[in-house]
Length: 131
Image (cartoon, rainbow, N blue to C red):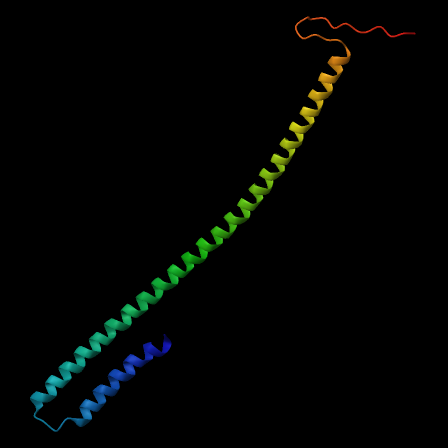
């Protein structure tokens, strides 16, 4: 990019120099047209250089914005991993809770069966133990 920026003025100056040196000696009217062309080319060169500077500044702004967006994306990835880990931990705790509740329900059913408990009777009868 640096070479292209330097190449245009060098080429323009070279072409102007070649055409200036290769033109036969003419009347002052021809010199005025060459001067007008040179002036026009210099204005165009100045305009192109100004737009190049403006575009370079715009590119820098966009590159900074891209870096900010990438940084934000990376932060969100870290937060997502933390939330997924937290979710997995809570899910494992919930599964363990369900399993222990099923075990307790099974133990309660087994204990109710040994007590001769009939659902809906309201009173459980205990089988007498022999002393």
